[in-house]
Length: 125
Image (cartoon, rainbow, N blue to C red; front, side, top):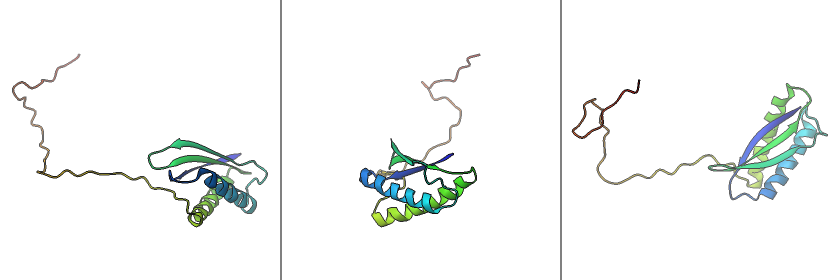
């Protein structure tokens, strides 16, 4: 049985370094956490250029269905801690908002009246 963990790192990350560090954390987690299948070959696959990150999936082996939660929990905590030590950033989504200068435009509620030259609603029964 396997458990999938979705991870994302900043675009300026060295992906070879990310993969190496992630594999080290996988090995540590699989050796130390009860229920992990240590001889299962872990898989790391980069797959997404997201809005603010490069996404990848880590696939870990677990012995029983109920073990997946403990293993995923421990793996995420250990990976987060190690990424901080290694300087690997896990970015949060960011948005740029541009504010225009000038008079404020206040939206008005529609009255349902049609102005001259306006379009009327039609029925398509």
